[in-house]
Length: 475
Image (cartoon, rainbow, N blue to C red; front, side, top):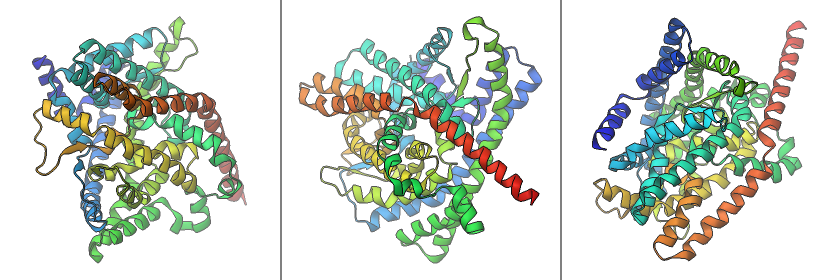
């Protein structure tokens, strides 16, 4: 097992800019694609990841200190700390047997594809980490390795089914044809966000009349309503709230404007490389009788996609002060900090549900963020115990460690926390997760028709916009 872990560690150290092209190149060759086209496509994907990493690294380098200063300004001082998803991931992978999730999850995915139980080939091995986390914490409290891996596999299956279900809307709204997003910490909120949109927000006339999406703002405000300007405004607001100097306020504005402008370009490069490979894979599958008429999707990381969506960026950072205020609620022990910079990914499916409506996304996103903060607290003790098992040095003065990104895993909360409750002799602790589970299943069933319906509406709107622009050009 140590040798497997060492291999996995070396793969993660290399990073997606190198590993993803290798995986995609091998995949393309397996499906008998031309070597030249496969090599070019795979390298282009790697270049896209280099661009994504460069943009996010630059932006987070500026936004991070501003966010940290905001926590000081708001006066939050708690016994637990949001250490961020990179640290949470390193804790999980630091537990020796967690590395086994890579081959296990890969084989489960291939088996489901062959049995026609999913349409998603999940190439995003980095996000296997939370299936591993579920296995780790189940094992810590039950000492049952079979149960631990069974829970991880169940989570993988559910996430792949969620990715299949959301594929039409993910592709249409985020502009990523041929792919889907089996990214548990984001896609597991899709049933809640889509059900809330269908049940509540779509029934409020004032919200439906409010055309508050990026395209409408651009049409009404011209240059001042462009996404690049919206990013600048949000950066200025964050800088002011963080009591930065005039220069730093302006710098934050420029960097968030850069995120709005550049991240979409980087996703475009990524998709340019992916499309030939995706088309080749789909062409091969279409020739196999059992897959006749069925589309196969490549699963990719939702993080860069959400951080390229103007509505998600705008709403995510607008709600940052609100998340800090929620930190004052009674019972909260975790100081929101490191993962505040990635708040946009937690509202990305609320944005998709509203087709980019800023106002609806704020209300729907608040549902997600309130739940995430609650579950960040719930996962604090399990992650702290995992940290001890992985020999992670917890910062001095901190009793608990957690992560908002970890707290976004409502599926793990529903499936794992009841097991911990019964294993620790506290069956009452299973009540809230089980209630969440019932709500989740009902929401998914209620919103079952929404991804296809919303995707069709997006296509219809795009066709109308194209006709309008043609008419204006002709005039």
